[in-house]
Length: 88
Length: 226
Ligand SMILES: [Zn+2]
Image (cartoon, rainbow over all chains, first blue to last red):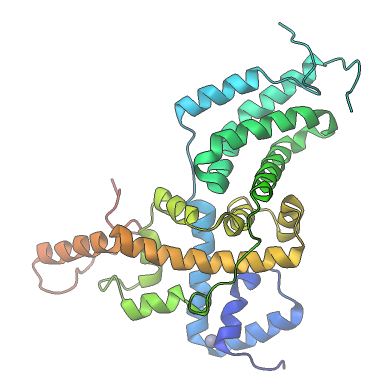
């Protein structure tokens, strides 16, 4: 049995919990807290959703004009050194 | 410093170009998240830097990841050159802000049985992007690298040349700020008003004078659902 923790301390550890980055002691303290605290269970579910939001709802498309300019840069790339000669 | 007599391997050049073309959308997306409007320029510099270092890439399978790391390095160097502060402390009020509690207290979606999920469901990809752009650069970078790109904290620390402990505290602050800005953005952009209106109308249309029955609220909540 680990020392009980407050809701505030529990909430501060939720992301570490989801990231699997907690020390074993913190992990069990949180597990014990979650076993009786419904509110923090809700917070945990919400943190999980937030994490998912960051992972999945952040696609960015490459605009056509930027793509054309960047591909031109790629075409002009020289490997190794600026002094490297063109192959054309 | 000059590498004298470098014979450019045309295969290397072709390999780098192929890698760069293939990774361009993803690289650009990362640059947009990190640097906003500076994205294109950031990608250009990363490509040029990748070119100079390509000889050092032993395992071409690792190329996609290697390019992203270079891009993050370029961004780190730019932030440093601008002398950004590592991090100012959040004021106490911000430190205590809880999006979870705020949603319970303000109840912005009175018709929702799954308030918290529906609140997040109201944000489009563009909305999430704009919210991220509101974060200070030095808090956004670790958040994007860790949670959008999926690097672990140790890798992020190496990419940003910061101690792991610093990355952890920046992640903590970044998450808090992100929650806070989600709420502010929702208020300022009328995101929730639009959502509630929609729900309200739906209830009215149903003519039952109560909450809309049967139909479960879609995650997209009336925005761009077609
Ligand atoms: Zn609790």
